[in-house]
Amino acid sequence: MIDLNRYGRQIILPNFGIDAQQKLQQAKVLIVGMGALGCPALQYLAGAGIGVIGIADGDDIQLHNLHRQPLFYTADINHNKAIVAAEKMRALNPDIQLTVYPFYINNKNALSILQTYDIVIDATDNFPTKYLLNDACALLKKPLVYGAVSRYEGQLSLFNYCQPNGRNIQYRDLFPEPPHSDAILSCEEAGVLGVLPGVMGIMQATEAIKVIAGLGRLLDGVLLTYHALSAKFYEMEISKNPAVQTMNKAEFENIDYDWLCNSNSITPSLSVEEFKHLQQLKQLFIIDIREHNEIPIIDFADVHIPYSTILSANHLPQFPNVKNICVICQRGIRSKAAAAIIQQQAKQKVYHLMGGLSAYFNQ
Image 1 (spheres, rainbow, N blue to C red):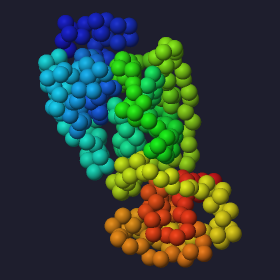
Image 2: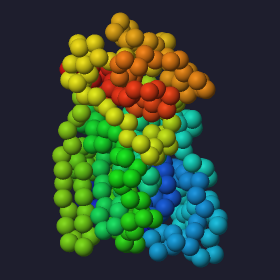
Image 3: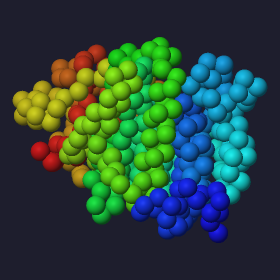
Image 4: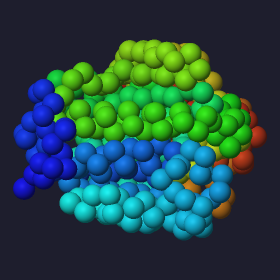
């Protein structure tokens, strides 16, 4: 039953009505990150009448959060963000159902949690979780509302929109690999204008409502950038990257996202063209790190060492030092991590193949 007194100002909107309100009531939205982006997104989605909202965050509230997370009060310091936020939203709107995950989303629990929701909102502030959420949503075919802020600038987009009219653009189409950890400053290092994530979080909530209710133009494959000081918005069209392929469950669950995004060393890579050229010259020792059941079967690798073995092995075999090494996998994700591990023991330079075998066979 729709409460007309609570939602009346929304229901009377042109092209909205009872039908759109019922869609919101039936929708399930997961917000990952209950910080500066997640707080405003949660408040407005709860107020709008989203039927089920999941709230995930393992952080406790700290004093330095309060200038940009006014959902929390000084008395809330040292309490879990997700738990406190849920308590306040139950007081705001007792009609909705709130599910609390007072811990961090990782690649071991992500799929089981995300699969029960219609839309995921990325309100996180770190690269490991952003790549993790993108890969999980791509695997599950769940729309992902992306948001990010730094200093005076915010970004917004809709990824993994797999509806018949959707473009199914991924975060990895825009950023195929994480930047070097020293190249991007965190909010702690760079700072952020307190009101900026409020603007972007509300816009994330708006995009989610548009997806659910079927309203307006979606930011499907469009990166929207907002500059607070100039009060200007800019849009950039995102193209599909043919080298980016959706991974399978085994690949996803075997990736160490923290290592992948926070390594202090840049793993050198080879493009497909460079790889094929050096391959023809027989100047590479090629290591296939895919698991035993992965296809296609190839005959040009010099050795096969599954990624799971590399992660668990204390010592790897000695490799001939007359050639440089190139590590390959299906998508070029695991190979980056494996190459850095192998480099610790190898005397020669260790590369990885950008885009993996998917790019190799598509070019």
